[in-house]
Length: 197
Image 1 (tube, rainbow, N blue to C red):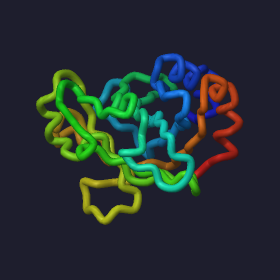
Image 2 (image 1 turned 30 degrees about the vertical axis):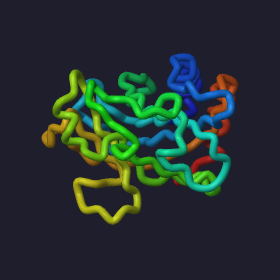
Image 3 (image 1 turned 90 degrees about the horizontal axis):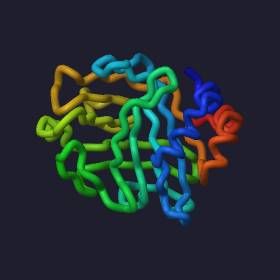
Image 4 (image 1 turned 135 degrees about the horizontal axis):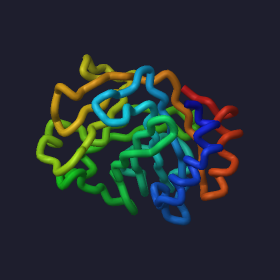
């Protein structure tokens, strides 16, 4: 599904309204949408896109995990959002499924000058999610990193269970500034013009 149809169906408006974008008034808010090469099949429904909503007070240069005011990762299937991990809220790193994590447990990198997404990882020690209550997914991307498999341009696995690890990678990544609810209206046009890899 393309992001234009997602926006027409109100998907981004719903994301904004649902509180995934909960940044402070001073922070700039962005959506980064990864369209997977192949669906992640260990969920029901399958994941076809990964949506990151994030905000920062940084206006240029490289944003890392310590610069985030808010950060969430959501799963989409056919334009429908069905799982969200709120990683950073109001500058504080949140637990996942009852498993504590701090700033040293996550990774985020984005270059605002070039609008280029870099590495990210919502739980660097994904095996710890075996102790989570309920579904807890380790989602990571190392597009140019020096790591060997199981690292990937985008990988997902559930609850520290290696049998659920899949490396779908992504065919496209788009980042769109979304400073408020009005951005949801304009998103369809912006996405096609601001395509980045």
